Image 1 (cartoon, rainbow, N blue to C red):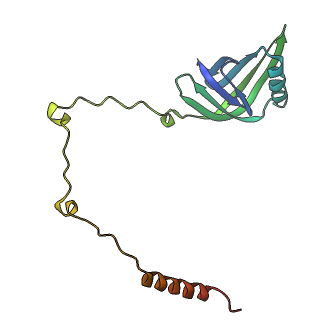
Image 2 (image 1 turned 90 degrees about the vertical axis):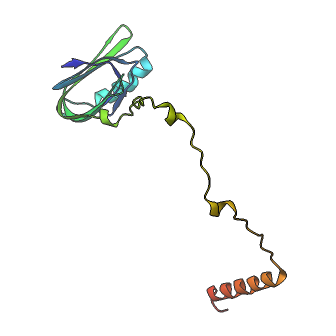
Image 3 (image 1 turned 135 degrees about the horizontal axis):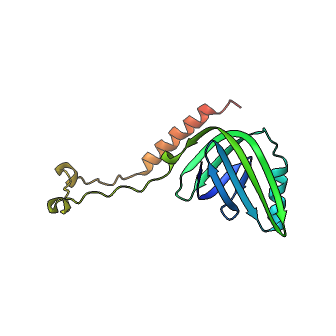
Length: 165
């Protein structure tokens, strides 16, 4: 079992931010402990924790400070909650049935590129092919005869699409 510094945990449909997490340990048993000082926040957590029962199945995900993600499923073994002079807390233990590490999905910093020879640093000069250098397009002139032909073509195409009146 290893203690990990966690920046996020989600279990039993409860999202726990790093400001609440006091302990996370992972092994055959996932243990997440949170401390809450704000009574309004405690009401939110209390409502969610009250629905969790021993033996329930739960999905979980833990994200470490390094960005590694551990995801899986398991059975609830223990749910504790307490209050002590304005400080509230809870601990959830899950017997891990299936888990996988999702470190391959996280973005990685690209490796350093080895330095190149001085000749490789010279900018490459590109010249366009000869056929592309001398292409000049003359503007087309549109006259009234072309416009009339276009209108007639358009009128015929619309007439074909409309049902007879």
